[in-house]
Image 1 (cartoon, rainbow, N blue to C red):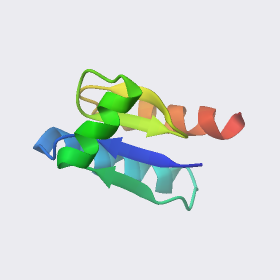
Image 2 (tube, rainbow, N blue to C red):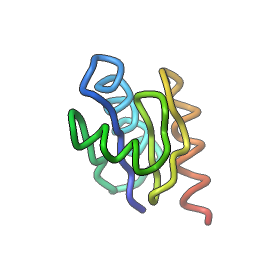
Image 3 (spheres, rainbow, N blue to C red):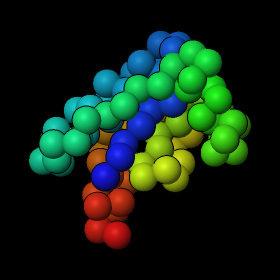
Length: 84
């Protein structure tokens, strides 16, 4: 499973990245969370058609965009992606 957080590098993006790392750990997975910011993050968002930042992307599919401070919701997305 490939987990990415995309954004401009703002505090909201960093918060989603930190929460996602925590959610991965709490869910018992060993996957690394890739954090793409700045031009790389924005370019990837454009490629995926994501219009709000930050974005949580799992296996190349955006699963959450915008402010996300609900770690349980992040965990659910990770677990759902793992079940597929």
